[in-house]
Length: 483
Image (cartoon, rainbow, N blue to C red; front, side):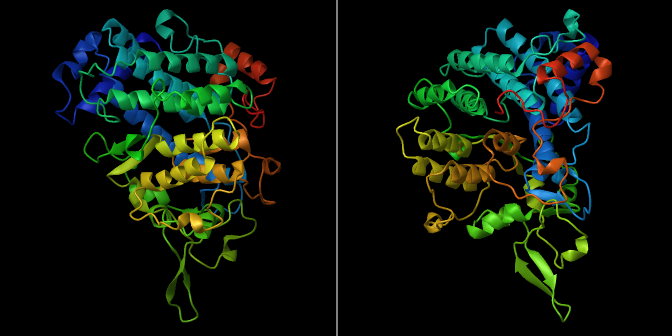
């Protein structure tokens, strides 16, 4: 993927970027002239921050449109919210993820040299998270031979998605066994869990649960593996509260700042989608003011009146003049320092358990896990007051169906990279409305095209990837687990 000079330059730039503006980093970890003495922790904070920033940006630019959270407005024709998918849509994630996979590899190597099992486990966890996103976006991708330019492999072969999942799930099992909670993380404090080994281990196992569930349609024994994890919390600890979640707290203190240098751009020419806000209205949900502004309309006396939370239908047909109101848009405070970026939350863990219970794989109350997940999803958005009668609303209460679980999980995954889209592809829920103005026959895309320059830079690998897909680099080709 990159030669040795490029790799070292990226490491140096990452270290400089994340240490130049703070005195909290140890001197030995911030001297780019001593990069050969890199500690396991030198790259951890840059990796965490860069992945979080990229993921938040992709959630905003891609997932929100695909999953009818928001849409560009006005937008009379075309656009991702109409499933008009560009050839280069995945370029940014491909390049960014592989860049940071190289640094994760360097981190793991340093951890092994220093015999630091906790940092080794963290590297395995981050590696699994990134490869899962890559393969879920594209299908077959390079892994076994990836980021090996220093070894002379400039044109890596592609691995099947099954091979990738087999490897990363095994790595998460290994990582869980490696953690030593009696041993401190001795380097500079990480920005995600503040060197709390127990929380890192819970992150590893919570991610393990996410990925086992992801492939459950293809490998039904995943449900039993998940049940074994749930039934053995001492061996497989997972998140047990919102406070434990993998949520990056962006402080606003350099270099840990909002990815939106101009927060106003977050909602510039953007409106909340009707599907997203209408459900919240039905539930009288307290997340509305956190996420959205209220809509306004001009009355016959030219007075501006508040009409509550009201969106614009995604993929609407016809001119924008049909909408005689100023629809809700995003609350800008979500991307203004200080802010949060979500990797994986306690709410997601509870919805996984709710699904396991609903399917009969664990002998626990699905309704309890469902309600825990809903409440946790509110907590992670820092809702000031959670109503005690929320579940008295029959539209919000658990009704025994997977569809109800997945609808609320959709809101719990709000602003979490591509996860809403991945879970929709796995389950078909929530059921999203379609319009005549949609492209692709109104069918949700199943993957991204490979990067536009891949066929030139690695033609043999590209041809192999397309062959593994079944012969077509097409957005409707389902990936291995999407059955």
